Length: 484
Image (cartoon, rainbow, N blue to C red; front, top):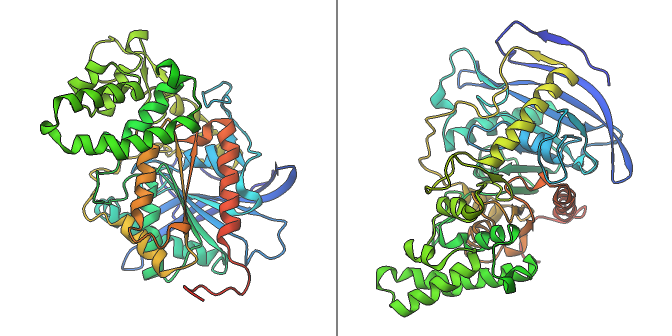
């Protein structure tokens, strides 16, 4: 690896506009892929043309491609809001991956290794840190209220992407956005903003563990207690808490049954509220308890709709453990087994344990970005303005106006925060007309919020992205139009 060293040690300031370039190679699916990695900063310009902030990014570009005009490029965001890009950067799609166990638990010594599942073979990738995440910072006369809100975030990031694409000469390339968690409303809104204000049309948007995207469908709200029942089943199945007849079935066989029950039986029963007949209430409580691995009286105590917080504390209470929120495969221990909420989130503690040393080591020691700035894994971005979240509608509108735009939804069955069935529900309701359903695709995995931490799902989920890229690039000369 070769790079030019520029040192900002002993300075807690961010250079507004700089790059450090190095080269490396990785073997993906048996093929050696050489690449160039650029780590640096690019300004966020205010209305007066002056620098109001600077965003830190890492950009991977395959170098053995003769003509990259038609080579896809992914722009990758994490969520929070306030989450840095390290999660998908060192966990998912890049040529480097942090060292973790096959199931995603931290191991020492900390560090990074080659990622043989990276999508660098089919696409270039830039990992972007919004303001106050990673090393990105407000500069000069920039104000917090310019950046920290749903629409403020979309507005300045669209401008930044436009500048980046121009600087890298990638206007001809097929373009993709990928976002995780809060990154999903971010990229959904950006799809609409880039198309309407910058005339930048995308080929695809990947929603990893999506939120509700600001949608208010005619049915229940996304991520409501009723929609979490299939997730409860998955988590209980993983921890061997289901009745034996259910436990012995495979998830692929069991979950569709619970999904059907949720929509056709559970939801109508809850719709009757306190006026549900007592016999029907008992019947539903019994079935929900079976599917969730809970005691029937516990379900009745919560009037059939068990909150997720209660579930995370209750499922393994008799064994002395809590389970994780973002990934319920992880177990935690509380000061007392009593109570109705966890002391901490075991999965998040585990992830910080492994990711934080890895990203600091990789960026500073391997890529040569020397700075005394703290890398904000979870940065100070609050108060956050949630008003006017129309991001789901912005994505729907972008799809309607762009016949080439396709969407891939990826979710882990054991994610209790942005649960997989709510992700399906959001996808179903993204286009109420049903006319674009063939451009909406869902994939589920046997892991949690960051499904890529499990080695088996890292391979599968990246392969699903590769296939998505292949399918979303039209054949040469095929016009973007509806009908014949």
